Length: 85
Image (cartoon, rainbow, N blue to C red; front, side, top):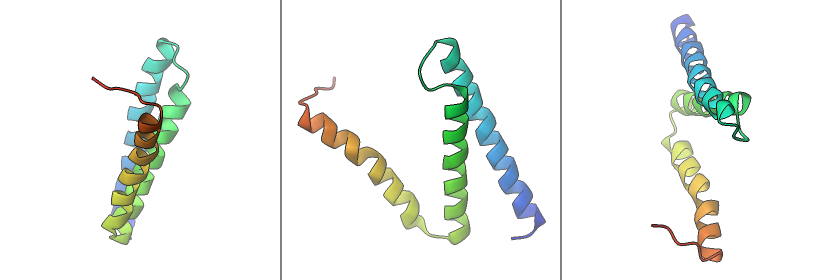
């Protein structure tokens, strides 16, 4: 990984932190629980995870994250008989 790749990675992480922070700032204004810091950290962590996925060249990592993110939510919906419209 040369200096240009590292600069690109840092730029992506900063952009993710800014975008997540903006979303969090809007949530803070409406007094939601997860605000600025939470959204900035989540967005930066997701960006870092996908950058590691790009660097390692493994697409399985990203596919498993998608499955893991939806699996608990769907089992909760099914176990509580929640209907969606």
